[in-house]
Length: 335
Image 1: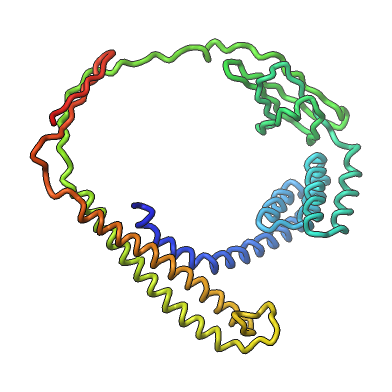
Image 2: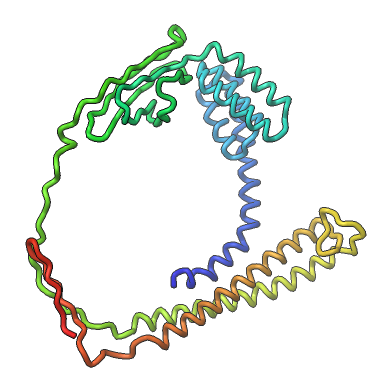
């Protein structure tokens, strides 16, 4: 019933969504470019700690190989070599997908140059079921026992398992030791984890007679569905008229197309405005169809709900009594 009531509203949202999405994409691209320019100024001022996060935000808004290369370079200048190495490899993968061999070569050369300078941490554990975290990020079990590139600085390693005490240690990584390691011992049992919470016994409560439904709720739902169905049909009619109007405007900007092209709409060659109008007409036509179907379903369902609702109390009583006591449940009723 909720889906039927919401259907007409969703139609209107879907129709407006195309234009809103385009505006959001344009806004995101503009914001990404602004963040990129700010980051470049900060890099020139050697304020890498402020510049790198702006490049991260810019790449999230508008992913680009150039942004990744600048981010990797920023991390390298900030002496976060593992982060730089990882971003260079991201740039390699993105350049391959985009068919940019020049950018791919640049990223690969920079990554290969960084490789010998990386600090690689190896974490070993004697607790096979332990969940191991590095700086709050859970490591895949396959990474345990293998060298993992890390940035220089302080790192926290934690290991936990069900019924065990958590193990935690801190590592200060530097280029003086490029191959640090941490051994996680077998975790100690946690006595508190084995304690069973005390159970509570439900106290007896009085029986309650529940009167039978009069059908008023069902009739209300039926009326709501009928109203929503009428709205849906109305929306269908509105979008149907809008479809006709948009097609007329689109055809006014089109001519017979001798050869199919990017601006070909239904055998007609249209200018850019005509193509946009034709697309909007198609969207409005789809919305009209959906609105008519949803509205019709709501009307039919609402009518069925209204006329099948009970009209009053039945002659026999159907109240039920439920009693709960320690160790027992008693169910009874009158029929």
